[in-house]
Image (cartoon, rainbow, N blue to C red; front, side, top):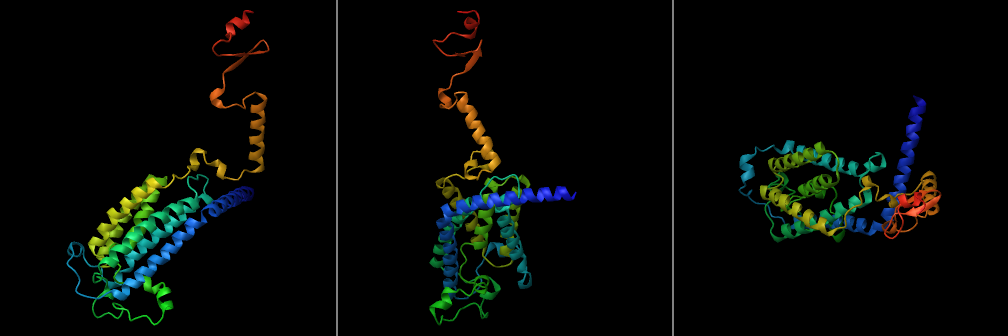
Length: 316
């Protein structure tokens, strides 16, 4: 039992090391996209912090979702945040599963380049919409009488740039249309829908996205329009950008094995195969190869203008 555990642990460690080497090479090639995506995340947070200075509390607007869904209350607002945190952490762990699992279909660096592209495009549209019109926030800390509903003028530029993280993000006001939580949730679900392998998890992901939408409205964190706009906007953004981006290499078909570093054993096997092909005269392009049959120590080529095997055996 001890030997088995040690052998499997050794295999797992070698797999992790090989995957790290592969991902580092991909990171060197794509670090600009990753860095740009992370910078845009900060810009999005900065924009959400800035619109809080413009927010003016007022009466909660009439909303169909508020009539249909019972209010959870301020003490139960953590439920929607808990669901979102589980979705976020689950997706992050899934993107790193190639480091451990044998069945590997994606590359972590490449999948995050794609995810960040979807997020940046959606968040850019979101910034445009919530700066176009500032609505009175329905959340409890954004209503009239709350000290957090209006921010005092900043005393320095540094105060704005630091965005009071994470409190400034959690207790923001004014960044309503459309929901940022739904942007992340839908981008994660759509990404797993395309590159995931478990059908049950795909169905569960869509169910959680619907539940998350209802919880956001029931918690009075967003109006119904914020969630509805997020559903069709994010889906359209992902649909069109996905067509513009180059398709990810599928690791399951072995076509992308060139990205993986070869071990000494695999390199020796590959060299032997190439040597064997050269000795048999198979170094030409496969399209130009002709079937060859050996008869009486001679190689006969089955092609137009060449004697067939029957004539060769008859001595013709």
